[in-house]
Image: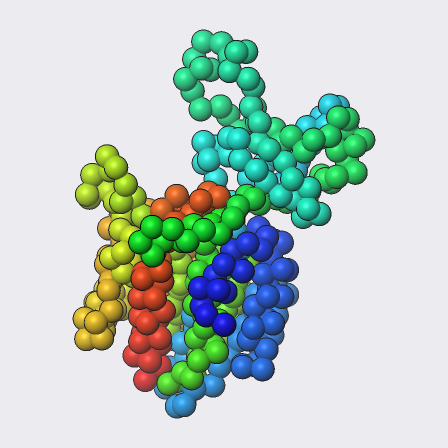
Length: 339
């Protein structure tokens, strides 16, 4: 199966933080028979793929399975759901969006009608507390038969290929990374490698901490997506990275100050192999590298990002060519670190 077919199938599955079972089952169905693997107590998949050569240094490659979502917190007497966010979602992105819950119930994120707004309510983004999910129920009893308190939901989205090598769907963060790792496991690797498909990244990079402790690697390569702000009216220096310009490698974010040696190595290898690469030019965000690099005795860690517009929305947009660059660079770095 082509890597992009897996990205489509993975992205359309539901798997918010703490509810990654469907993603885990899919990944296991693909890697079974191609590597050794186990699932730890938190739900991470830890896989070991034997390469053509034994690795002098233990290398771990990580991608997270979970996506952002919502969780039902209360049901009103007239059958509307109040909710909280699972992971970071901008309130503006929620307004009017469709969500699908664990049991298949579909709801619409609603807000007070415009003709009832007063004063600065007409121009301000509403608070999350003022929003609700309309699941079509007419009473609390009917709503409770459709969605239970504590059930999670994710954006209801479709997968679209459009424009010049662009793809759009929810959860490309980080199902792209998962698909790249699966593709590597299905290939013939030069060196032995460990892979972690981790849980609960969106609520604090929790699964990766446990995965790294279990693997105890010398090096870690974190595959992620990162915000591409290459859109209208954004100054060049605030664009972070750009679609079509290759894999985006981080030098610093809010959770990690990366090794200059590893950062320079990525650009050297990319230059030698003709892989498109760019720096992530804004110190913002964080990912599993933040917990992995501090685990055990310390781990030399690098993050290789796929640029993504409209992150944490139902319409994440990536460029296929960047994903291919991430795939090539990740395997090249594995070989470099392993030897």
